[in-house]
Length: 503
Image 1: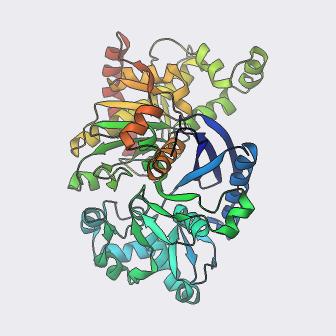
Image 2: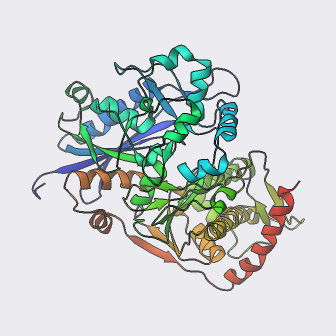
Image 3: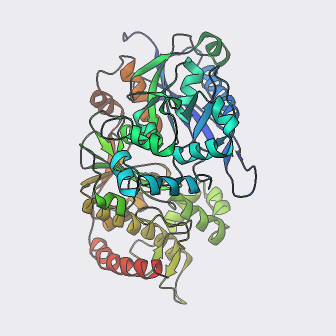
């Protein structure tokens, strides 16, 4: 691609409740962005589905909006990231046959128990790199075969969501390794569909897409589709990946012992390492082992269900006047709350399981706790203590990862929470690790741009792209006396967490 050509690259992110399209130039400058929500549907209480056709309609709208916003730019290539586990049933003519069952839906529990009897938890982890769980695609497809046999017989392919959108754009059905690894049917070491898992499930392997590496070209946008959304028919569609894996690339995680800390609604630490880690500790701590979008590396997702959501809870329930006061002062609400928070560690301990616990417990019944209240406790101390509690929990995850053989030497922070210097300093002090704040907050989108740009020949390598597009703007180092204070309180936190977990 010549330097005189106005190049633009598009990233698409498909989430559970909305999709986003972003258009960048080759220097990483954001040109336009659009977001569109779609509803989560409940065919009966406690069941969760999403309509693939509504998702595709939303994708068309966001693509058209960003291409219309910058008409002088021509999109050279696009790549797609998406949430995992959920698959779309599609027939041989390309028609969607029904709703997609979401990962939090309870359907598949009985089928997961059947898999446990047939193949076992240890063998499942050894093959697939994920703990045996009904959230994954394979038990959901087993449920469809048992309870919706007419639909099942008509299915040509069950497509993970990012792969489904790529299929509608190009007419080519493939699945990248990172999304395939969220099905519980993928052999993570051999990087192919696993016959043993399909046989145990009673599912035909050819009902899942062919496999492709992230970053490989899939094809070009079909002419009939291109005309309706403002893309040229020769726009290259590049295999993307699972949203956490693309975010790791977008944060510049290209070597071992590095990790990205995505501080969104959920907080997720994603470390990289060089070969599959599938030992008993991984299963004990309920961690996964997944391919990175960068060939030759693997990733694990260590997460807590309350990240930014715990601060939103505080804002909505304990600081109802903060929004109006922040607006009066011309501040963002969290900037306002940060400015009033104590500068030093609190005497409070928060167990942050306000939405159940993530790794390493994975207990949906776990409850949050606020310990250490006195008549002198202030609301602003509680606000800081919430950030401390989430960070203690993530430090515990870092310790568990080390016991499983995955060491983390540094963290790169992205997501909405990474905008808070207060929280990043708390993280450095509690974790006793340097925390890098990046020029990139939307790392998933940046990962898409890097994948698309390398496939289009704009960047010669991922290293070149990261060097050009991703850079630390500030490093938060552990500081005294807070680090030492937190070290002592962390031991108390672990005792409290264990005690509450045994209730």
